[in-house]
Image (tube, rainbow, N blue to C red):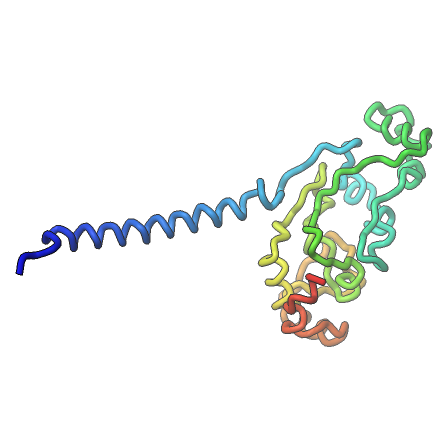
Length: 219
């Protein structure tokens, strides 16, 4: 019986299958790269603000505690942004004529709040509570990075679901004593896993199964 396909068909079929596999792998790699690019995650990007506020100067240089400006962080899901009154506590006395602080003075005169650009933004369908993380011993720097070293605030981590889930699966890797939560100079000890497991029990952290349940973050 005559051949329906020429002998070269087998080689062509193998080449096509190989090309499809290569294209699939390349496409997946490109898609992964786009998904994790700063353009999508906003990681490492600074944004123009009404005033070029420097956390490095205020936190590291002046030693101002996070809670001085973010007053609701220990008791609310929202950390809070400082009202103009907080800024003017100091700047009614120092740098009173600095041009860069004119938006602050104008806000104080007019009573119109400054319109700060949010840096760390989660999707609207994600529930995040600052206070519960603080109560369980998660330091500010764990999520926000070393803000005391940032002349301009930027998003230190990707804040993608995979990043959050990794911590929820192994919370002991990041837990610290509550009194060290706001300490930017805190360094994990050599026995972090042992300490983390101890704090896990002491602070009654929920199990990894519960922490990774969809309902924990998507309500």
